[in-house]
Length: 135
Image (cartoon, helix red, strand yellow):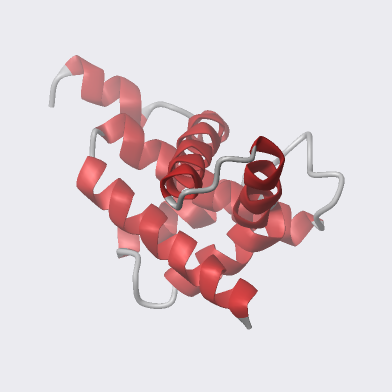
């Protein structure tokens, strides 16, 4: 393993969540723009449905039930259990921690350069949230 891979392994789950949040937001925004929506206010309204902690928590719970690998689940749990100084003003602590777990996983996949798996996980999460919002 080269030195850069060692450095990626040493990144804290909080820092992984920081980068994962941005990566996920970009995927969501791209999906919405590609859907043909052009009104920035409407784009923001739609994006919130996918990026809010409650939606991310719902998605990660579903993903952990057979979609994620054991190492991915371990990372989500590690991030979920990490002591956090901040939390969302609108989400409960459990939802916030689960959402942080999803973001940390996405951050790890991004930092590892696992672009194909990253896309699979994000697309499945979006699909789960989209199906829930239709119900």
